[in-house]
Image 1 (cartoon, rainbow, N blue to C red):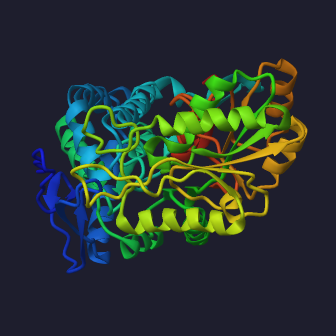
Image 2 (cartoon, rainbow, N blue to C red; image 1 turned 180 degrees about the vertical axis):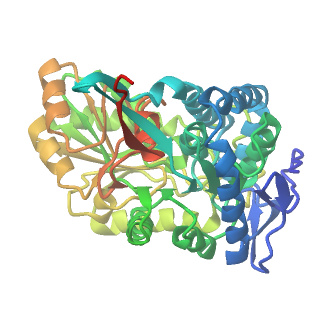
Length: 493
């Protein structure tokens, strides 16, 4: 279906419905380009309301048979999918680099995280078990069981097109549901390859489906009566809209929003290690990730030394095309987003922050059309500045000095977001205080990026998440099933 050569050329993107590749009926489409080279990659026709309706009806028909199959049978295609992902990880990574702009190493790491979720979902037979109580009442036994609900849809963002679909898909189908994915229209090619592997893995027709499109396609999924629940990952304003609209339609919803994450560095920290991990957290994937820690609060006694180390580390990063050896930071997703990041940098300058390193002059030989911004470091960034409050989604770091860990926690907790935070310290007492008082969903200690493994849920508090049950792990089992109680009496004849 998708055949990419070294330049990244591709055919028209298609939907995958009922086991067939189908071109959406809508006349609206988007041309995608390689963000590092400017080369056209393919065309993305947008699905109409009728396309979505066809996918939902097909999924619901497939659910009738799929939900009744033994759980051991349902996980067999996942074992096969895991094997296929392993065999094709290099091809997937190359497509991802050309489609999104990140480096080859980042693409491999993203796909590895996705594969981990497939592995965890293969354990559904034990994860779905609830419990039995004999003699709960005279001559009565009671059992709690989990049952699948129907068809679920997931709407995923551009920044992790290989991983985030696998936060949801394996759990949905292993628990007995049908599943529809609507990927980002900005970089859908790795998803096309993923669904080729899904087709090969042996899922029954209609159990796993793909619809491409934009806003109207998303709304059609949210509003469709045949869908039981919606999962979303994206910006906070859109996450809130998706949550409210889907909930108003009576659906289960989990909506992961944006972030403004903090790192706190104490005077007892290994400063060189902390600087290395800080720059990596903020600038890896060109800063386009909701776990990027881009506000750094440093104890006053070590602020100057730490700031110097961060600048040195930032200067050492090589900006370039993700398929070229030695590239540390790839391109931003689009020219429009590059402009947004550059505007934020200019705003920081106008607000009076100290420019310790300006990455706007980043250029890459041979890639004049690429969307590149280098690591940018600001010092003396006060709490009221825009670059301290708003998610930039680019390789921009904001540093400021604080009197103490308590002062840093107070400032961090004042943020509307609560996605991730990390503390670098040599003090167990400071670490314990941080863990107890941080109003954050993903907390790291001496860890630059607090990304939970697949067998734990992905945290997120406040305006970083709308809903009750998060992605990954056991939360997914609860989201994709509902409990029933069996109360049984078998008196003697």
